[in-house]
Length: 354
Image 1 (cartoon, rainbow, N blue to C red):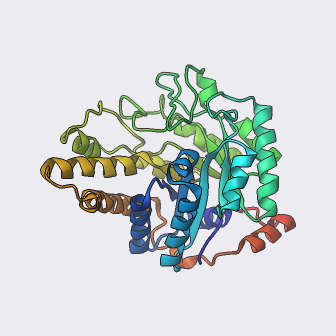
Image 2 (image 1 turned 120 degrees about the horizontal axis):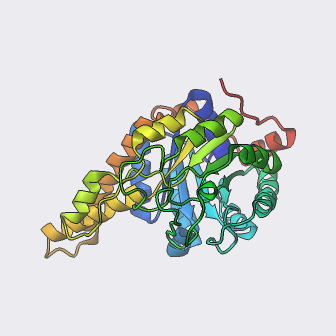
């Protein structure tokens, strides 16, 4: 099996100047589609599951689904990543079920909705790093709170995210604080706040610098050139998918996501992991609406889901190609968790930019 850690994957991405789309998995069909897209583009794979996805699918089902994907495509290096772990116990349960990477989101308290103090974030994240690195497992941390720079409001999605208002400085990661945070926690990757948010309703207009602060990413990269940065809430929310949904019974107000050109700009400034969830949901749900409207007598679940799978494959292939990871899969020689643990212990995993 070609399991790989986030650290090894992002080190390779950094050395070769590409970004990794991190696709959130919510059911069997989304998993199958991501794997087909990776196989057809010879791309490494970064599979994510959130706590809500784990609850919906069930850990036992999810772990076997992931292992089936790895065994079906043994030539592809695959990283299994926990998205938005809220405390050490959550992260440890993911490690125990086979995840090779976990995220400890200490930007919020354990309730996943209350913005935390900086000291809390450092302490909680460092505790996860200590446990994970001893097992060879990677850790992503987060500094800054995801939310809208346009409105100053939170973006609670799937039970995660603050509700209410925050000041602009709370919604942006401070570059100097980021430098201190990485030194204090030894995280393998750092998710930063730059105005992106989860879900479809990110921006009311095509984002520019006042509501999507890509310059903050560039400033952080200048301070931390050897740290892998992460963009959360980076779905593009394509217009064609909004139209597909609305033309077949949906009612989505006009909204804007993160343009692919801005993600590519971020990749040039150290962004190595780009989270994508909403785009997949829209492709699946829009396709289901279209099929059911055009085939009103059908009750064949497989037929209902098949067009969505095809759309997700196309979408994921485009992300693999635009972010530069297409063609990279067979260039990575996976390291085992034991090998990674030895490298952590020896302190020889510090990434050095070319």
